[in-house]
Amino acid sequence: MILVVGEMTARPETFEELKRLSLEHVHRSRGEPGCLYHSVQVSCEDPLKLVFVERWADSASLKAHFLLPITAEIVRAGRKLAASAPPIAIYDTTAVSRDEILAS
Image (cartoon, rainbow, N blue to C red; front, top):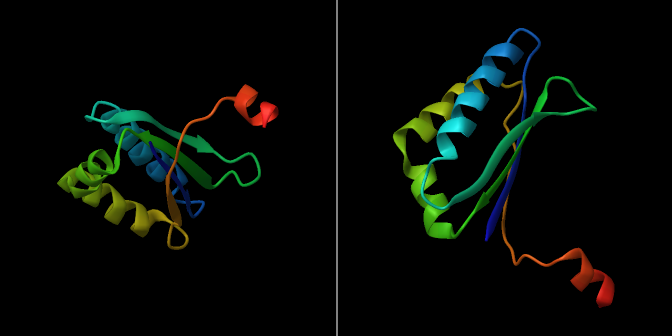
């Protein structure tokens, strides 16, 4: 499973537009092949920061997502609305249960 964690901090005057675009992107992405989870939340510590969490079945699914023209459009629009370059982290993970962690 591939885990993606990203964030974008808006400027005060761009927050609502960035949130609207982010929600559209999340809702569209959920229907893509290999998308297991895709969400956006507003940070409790910074009300201008949107935090994205995504889970993809495999790297091929995520690559297909990144190569979609609409995804590139959202990234470009987000960069224009963000206060700074948005960080993104991508992890290749293995799911484990809480019980497995506690038993080790």
